Length: 167
Image 1 (cartoon, rainbow, N blue to C red):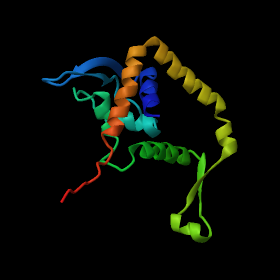
Image 2: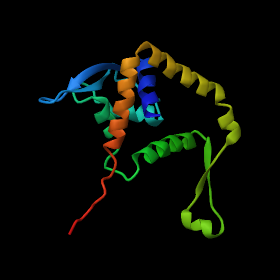
Image 3: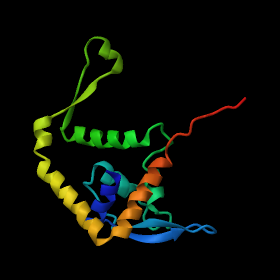
Image 4: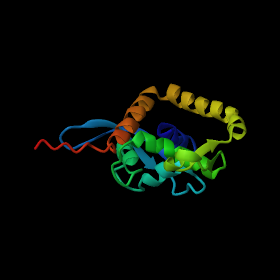
C-alpha cells in the first residue's frame, strides 16, 4: 500500500522520485522524493499521509525517512499498522462497519465487518491499480526496485525493539 501511494503520487504529479545517495561518509542509495506542488487536498489514506510526510523544500526526503515519519513513535507491528491505516480509511468511505461482539467476544471489543458487495464493485479499480504499478515498474525498473526496498526499510525502522535485560 505504501509503495503504491508513492507511485500514485508520482502519476498524479504531486511528487517526483529520483535515485540518489545519502550519507556523509558511507553513501547509501535511496529513492529521493521531491514535492512538486503544495496541492494535494482531497487525498486521503496512505497517499495523503505520505504526501504530508514529504516535507517541502528539504533534503531529508529519502523514502525510508518519509515512511518513518508516518508514525509518531516505534510500534510493535508497523506492518499491521499500515493495514489498519488502510482499513480505517476504507471504513470512513463505508467499505467496513463496526459491529459489537456477543458473549465472551465482548472482551475483544467491536469487530470490523466488510461490506462485500461494495468491495466487490471495486474489482475494476483494483485492476487499474495493478496496471498503474505495472506500468511504473516497467518504465523504471531500477527506481521501482529501490522504492520497494526503501519502503520496507522505512517500515522496519519503526519496529519496536524488544527490551532485553541481561541482568
